[in-house]
Amino acid sequence: KVAYERGDFKGAVAMVRPLLYPSIELGSEEAVVEAHRLLGLCHFFLKQESQAEEEFVAALTMKPGLELVR
Figure 1 (cartoon, one colour):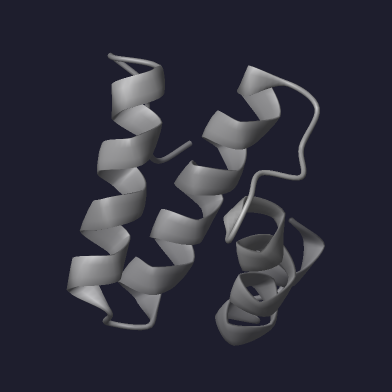
Figure 2 (cartoon, one colour):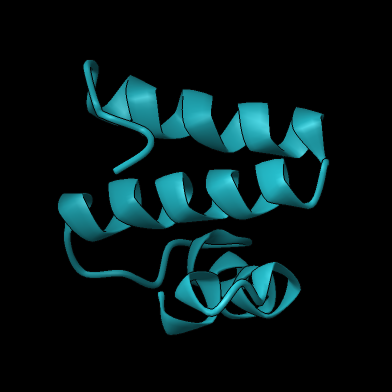
């Protein structure tokens, strides 16, 4: 999250993606949803629209009504 907040979107992707793929390494559903949301935002700001959409869909599937941008 710190890398994202600093604007280091590539760095954040490098740190967060392994927590979700190829298998989920997070302990709670809330953490998984947040990781998908954060990854989606990073991809969005990197102009990687299809990857951003995949992550947002994953987050919203787990938690409908999730606020994607806070």
